[in-house]
Length: 245
Image (cartoon, rainbow, N blue to C red; front, side):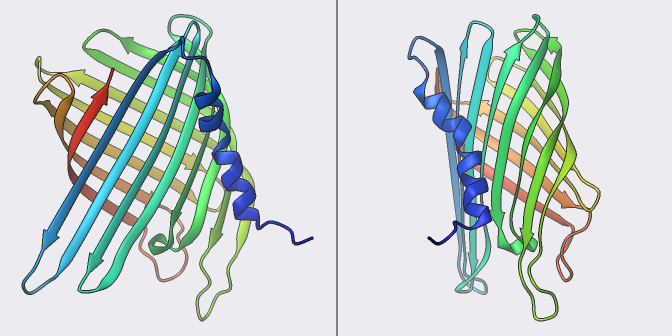
């Protein structure tokens, strides 16, 4: 019997938490958000780009659960110049009103970063430093198993690694006015060979109770990418957001 590729086994693990989320009772307090944006340019440069994200979450007693799926695609002058998708999920158990335990998973594919895929399965503790109606600030730190595979080049074959590392994140949001809010989401994955950092800063303006416009700027950084690839990628987005409450 043919053995399944390692990346496929990791992908099934990354999808495990979202599947569990969908299987839980409908009695929980559900929330959801979907956003998408496109851009088209013609003339000296023919560019088409699209990005989308779907996030769901629910709370039930001491449990808080979330899952998300995001994708980005860019095509310039007939050539694909960016293509990335990412899935993530997390389960929290509130030990107290401000302290929680978490378990989570993240998986992504982005060949333009030099990695065929990379992801992490992690667990640790977190703290809600600010938890008000208009302002939230939460941080978490933990350990996890990081796995990745590089893309083969003419000089270097593909390499696979799985190692123990650390994870950390810091999430902030603040409502400036009745219709305008800002947010900042930082995440990091640390290993002995490569550190992955990402941060997204955004501004959202509500048009109705469910519709909003969101302006975002994201930075993704690998400290030790494969040879020939840049360490840092950035992405600016202008999206229409639909929220389910």
